[in-house]
Length: 391
Image 1 (cartoon, rainbow, N blue to C red):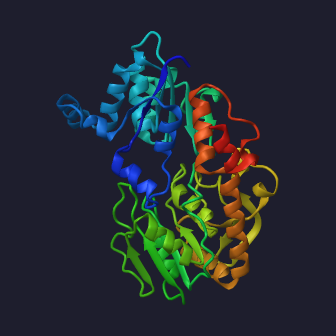
Image 2 (tube, rainbow, N blue to C red):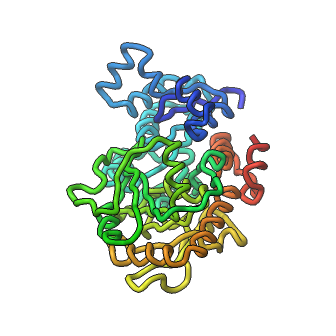
Image 3 (tube, rainbow, N blue to C red):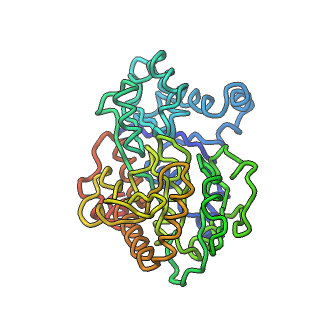
């Protein structure tokens, strides 16, 4: 491309954040990696601090729409615009309808199926200024095409990412401990009911940078074996390492809620017990548990993303139905009673991350999307080293 790429991020790409990554206090971040590779102009939280008019715009419209307006004003400088979520991408797409020759616009669609966004697609018609929407869940891809009016070629299913160098096993033996983490669409009430009275400690690291859901379990009383805390990245990595496996209880939702915790756990070599929601079946492969334990053949897994061979078939955890404490209790007890199976699942999950879902893989896929080409067909099998070399 003769012109550069304009990148719009829901984060603050400042020196303090870069220093935290460089010092090993944070994992590598996708926004830094994309900015470094694409090398174009960036609009981020710090940009809005730069001028009084932009601060006023943020106050009046909110940060996402303010960033969309700035991107629209700068559209003539670039050949492509990348927005890291539909909260910015949809307002920008509407603005780009005013442009005769808009730049290529690629956005990530995290949760497109809310009533308000369905209304935007139905009545305001942003589809014509969305060249490509990247989604992380097969259900979101289906909704985008079948219900929101996007053409199949406008939607690309790509896995989310994790930094496997930061989130890595350290070889220590696990303790009699199970953990969970995050807040987005979590169903901790079901988890608390499931673990009450079990002979195992449970730690819930209920903190999420992106989440607006701030109460881990509402007014539910904590069982004696449960602790709720907030941890930084290094302390969370320590918690994962000490745990036998990781539980991700979710409310029914049709996007990839919980994916950050799922991938962090897999990168740490831990089996994952996760709720089988419509949107969270594309990463973990495992049997569905009832109150009687695991049943039937494995479901889900990364085949939806093009993963093939042993990695696609390996079991990496267990699924449970939404809102079913008896099934969740059975799944937890099963892995506590079968530690060797939990270890095998964890090792398989680590392989899937290294070969298919690393941060470097993600960057290659997004860069290819922004530049208007397909990622290399053998990218998944090549592993992180090959992904880095493509960059």
